[in-house]
Length: 314
Length: 161
Image (cartoon, each protein chain N blue to C red):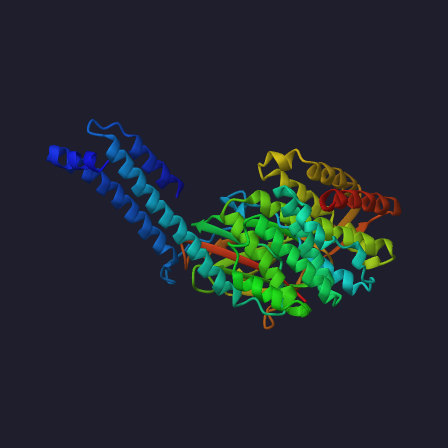
């Protein structure tokens, strides 16, 4: 190899010059591109006359943030609602952290990483510190097995571990943990894992909501009905990963079936002008929406979410 | 980035009478290295932007656990939809580049009615939203072209505990 290069340089100076010119030209192009990128942050004069750009999606180029058009509501938020609704704590309902070593495929590991995240937030909100710690360990194990633990901030894991027992800090940190994981996976184009973690978190949160709804919580029942849009989004998200094992897997098939039930839930929406307080930088959205979840639909949704959840965790 | 990649690919594929394997290999290695640097630079840029944006996410707000980032050029619009739950207060932080008030965002409801635009409030870097009812929202974000022509756009959504 070295020999060839030596020959290349010494045998024909003209040839070498042309080759070096070509390299230089490409180098120049790259240098220009680097300069262009480094100029991204540069601001232009604020005095420049700028034409107004309408926020009309039909006239502009649309870019999906992180390659996904929709986002899934946080399972931590659902856990907070369950607590607020007055529903009693149900430790038995949670996935046993011991199971974390039983999941042998990457899909099951990612799904259960989401499941345990919801469980940790739920246990933590009800001040079950011992259980939170066990769920934290399960999350750590699964992140390790999925080879994403090393990519996440070690200090974040450390802080998560040391804050078990402090519900407020734990919620903040677990939000950060899932955000970091989501970011890392998307940057590395692991949309399959990112979507499965979200799906697992959603299934567990919906399962816990259904339990609370069936024990008489009207808030939980309302929240369960409000998942109508999220379930459609979730199916779309999983389908868009391009991973055949997800697209043809039983989880997506079962979620599609659940989506079918949700589509039958009647909903209504009325727009009302929002109220903005500029000084406090807050806008109150006063528009109203309603969902009419019948007893039969509640029973059907509960049965299906139980089956989906069982197929993920067992 | 894609057009640059295409141009470089075309250059590589150019039939030159003096082309040889050594040259080809050197070029490929060089291009690979430059692209590695470029990719790293764009991610690093987004990381810096995200760090700045995080300063505006008050500790009372919990991240929704998702990362919303996009490299925007000119009038490109980043768009996503999410559910905002009744009785909750959310904070949306929008940041582009390394200076505040460079990103404009508008929140629409499920019928396409504009509920809020930070453009009306000097591109305010953050804004809080209280939802009386559960709403399917859609957010569109774009650069304020008077201030920035391209850059990494970061949106953060947090809900109040």
